[in-house]
Image (cartoon, rainbow, N blue to C red; front, side):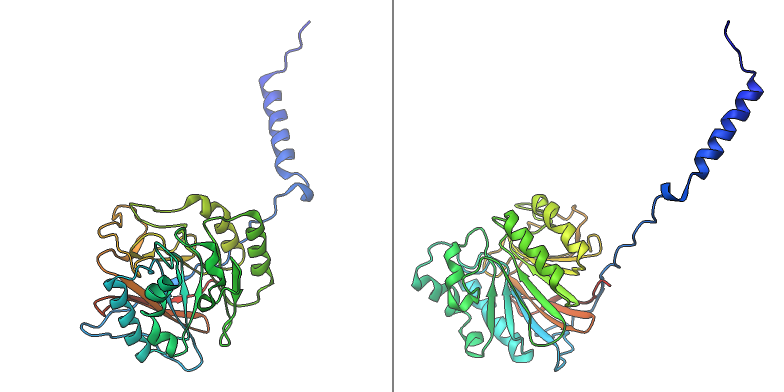
Length: 314
């Protein structure tokens, strides 16, 4: 004989079950979600009309550097932009240049290193400016032995300037093998610098029609950037300048028009671009002091077309 439970009793039993399960024990409660570090913030600054009007505070104890990528062509345009870099250095004594890859296009004979690097940047080299290279997809791995690229025979490495709490990490993004990723995480983990700045060739975020965002690279590197407090990432590969809107609190730059230019290649419908220039060759200068990084993007025509100050993630 089937036992039938009256509906009122069923409702009471169901209510008791819900209450018991809802209360549970302390050991079964989920821990509160961890609040991620704050986002890096960007405040844009206006550019003065005419001439090379830099926006750098130019403080004596700052880290001062330039960013250049996709440059080694030996063309007139490369030399002209190199001349503007010298003009910027006359006003703002940056100590070094980080190179985000594609350092030489075509052959890499000794005369090519001279024509595509040593001659255009001779005034900077003579002034004691150092160049710290990373490798792009057009670069032979033997470039790591070229003395003026300061790689010390390494495909990836890090260095710390004498001033401020800053460390730079040069990665080889064409062949990002597990060994390199493990090295990079250990370097980030062991660094107590406030600013941890990776630079490499392929952009995790980009609005380029030709290349665009390297999602494969992003999947591997972005979790490390987020975990270890990276605020700024410097890349190249797409032949234009782009400052991306902060992505998960991190500011990404594409500076890939040091000697190559792909006009009209920024996809204006990507929704990623905070500022861009796909009409002229360009480089960046930067200054870090305390929790802030100032930047100027400068074109071959000698004008600052994008500038601002970034406050790091904390």
